[in-house]
Every structure is written in C-alpha cells, then in structure tokens.
Image (tube, rainbow, N blue to C red; front, side, top):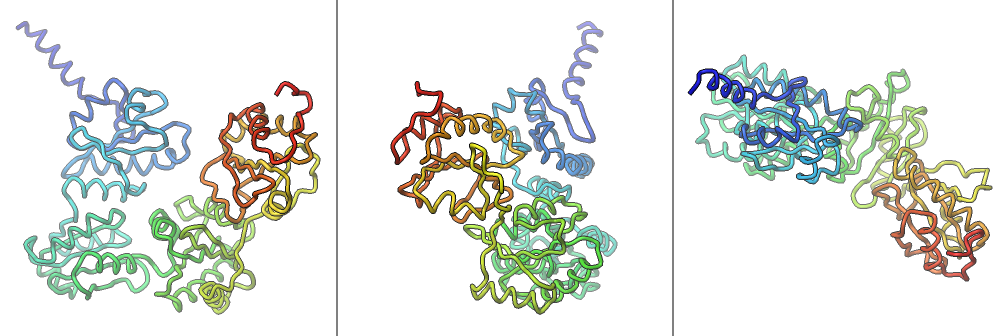
Length: 482
C-alpha cells in the first residue's frame, strides 16, 4: 500500500479520537457522540442548555471534577452536549430538563443521581469504577485525607478479608457525599488509638471525632453516620437539602448575615441547638455568602423577607409543607420554647401572603394569601384561578389570553377569572408543583376544585367556563358566536 495512503489513514484514525475540549470537559456533538461512548468504558455526559441557570452553576464544579478525574489512576472523561443544538442525541435520550447527567458504562446509560459539587461528582464516579474507598498507606496519607475533607470516614483493619470490610464497602457505596478511606497499616491504627475493624468519623466541627461502637450491620452504621456526619447547626448546602427536605425532617432555620445582630443571633441559635441536640427537630442556618447560592431561594420558599434578617422559620416538609414563624427576640430560651410548642402542636401555621391589593378595577381578580378564602371559597361564584410565578415563561405567554378572557366575561357577575403569585403567597390545601397551575372552583362545590385542561387561549378558557359554570350562562360581550 502506498506509504502516503497509510500515513493518511493513520492521521484520520488519530483525528477520529480527538474531541473538542473546554476546561477539561469534552464537547460532544451529534456526529461524534456515539464514537465517544464507544471509545471510553466509562464517561459522564452532561446534557445542558446555554440559558439554563442550574447548568451555569454546575459548570465550574463539573470542570474541576473533570480535571481531577482525567488525571486519576483510573481516568474517566467528563463530557457535555448542548441539547439545544445537538438535537438528535438529545431526542434519542429523551432529554427534557437541564442539566441532565448520564453515566455511560460500555455505551449503556445509567442516571447520575449524585450531588453537583466537585467532590460529589468525583466520589460518585470513583465508586462506580472500582474505588469505593480511598486506600491510606501511611500516616502522611492519613493526615492528608483527613485534612482535605470536611468529614472523613475511616476504616481501620488488617486486610480486605476482614469480616467487617464488606459492611464498610457496602456503606461507602451507598453514600456519595462523604469521603471514605481505609487503612491496613498497624502504625496508623495505633497512632489514632483505634481498634481493629473500627469505623471512625473525623470532622471539622463539633467534637471533631466519633468512634462507632454499635452492632456491625449496614443499617445501624448508616443511621449513626447520618447523625454524626452533620454539625449540630447544619449549613444549608446540597447535602442538607437531602437530609431536610428529601427525608422530611422538621427543621428550624436561621437566616443571617454578617451584621453584629446576626452574629449574636447565631450564637443564641447555636446554644439552643446544643441543648436540644438529639431531638426530632434539626437546626440549620443559611447565609448569603455561603458559597452554595441557596440563601435567597430558601428564603423565598419558606416566606422570609431577606431585608429583615436575622429571622427564624421552622419548616415541616413531610407530606404537606407546614411553616411556623418565630417572633420576638432571638434568645436561646425563646428558641427552645418555640421548638417545644411546635412539638406539642400549639404553634399557628404560617402562610406567605402579600398585602391585599387596594386597586381591584382590573378584569382579572388579584388574589393573595390573605384574601383567597373570601374571594374564592366563601361565595357561590365560579372562580378560575391561575397560580403563577413572575419568572415563568409559560405564565407570560398565557397572561394576555387570560386577561382577554377576563375582559370578555366581565359582564358575567357569577364568574371570576383570577390570578395569584404563588412565589409570594400560599393557600392551605393547594400544592403547586408547576407553573402555571390552573384550577376551577365551582360555585356549588368549592372543596373539590377541577384542574383546567382546556386550550390555553381566550376561546378555550371561555368554552371551558361555559361548560363548567354552575350558573346561567351569560354570553361574553363581543363574542356572541362562542
């Protein structure tokens, strides 16, 4: 074969495996995606949209994790696909939300369900490619491991044939947000005053160390670890979200800044937390400069005005979310009384609400938490309500049609078309999961609202109300043909 042809084929072969790279992350397209997942035994792929805020927040963490993993003992590439441009791949994997991360093992995808920080991503991947726990060879390696991690879970033993080792591996595999390490070095074990087969948590808060002394089974150790690996006052980060909201643990939150008043409040809050430690109510705090970006979103969710901090709110998220507002001076004794009143069921539930609007001349009735009962429930009118968010694109698209339908039906005294900003107002018994949510409250059965499923046009809205009304129909002005 001609040597130039051979050289050309070699160049093509090399080029075929070269992918565009950006900040350590491979940039894949419709044309080279299949080649990449075939070439690499393991590869994590992020499907993103350039305008997505969550994607932008993930970008630096994803890039840092990519840099570590590409240079690890068992390299694993991280890649990304712009799903708004590379539509063939996005459609093939039914990408509907952003960012979506998929981990490909020999070309087969599995859902990435780990955290979104550099360490979370690294831990999750390493445990799925073989390194469940970090080997600690000597005292220097131990010191580095403990120093580099906020929480370090260490197994002290002889070898992987230890009877307790399998349980520890199972525990490590089940927890992606903590760093697990193990040592079979007798000198390290002796230096740490640990026993053979013992698990110890080393942490940069509270008492600094916890030794496990209970029954050696997965569930008991996991329960113990879940308790000991969080500080008495938990910073509200990604890991805290799982413990508080996904597990449904009632939690009292302190929102604070760097002001002297906030510093004093945090001291009192911490004092109360220590005295109530081990109880059923968790203590957590959130600060605007905590590096996690959750402060404003959490405050909006629970109904705290961030202009008036320090502030305290207790949230019970199991089932329907219930919130309880702390009032008065922030003192340890007052906080303890507040928690005890919650546990005894004597606190009054708090609901977010804007002030009742003074201008009610528009065709669309403006609802807030404070007037919802009177305007929607305590009458026999048919009321169609739009639960919306100001930032929601679909809500903005619907708005002019909603307004137009309300104007056309303004001559009907028994039908009300209304809207309520669900980011600033809450209604008992209404669980809004997406925006906009549209509900019809019939005049003769307010306890059983009907979900709106008609066309999202003024004609669709009017036709729906014409069919559902519990009163005599009045033809909309200017639309006699409907």
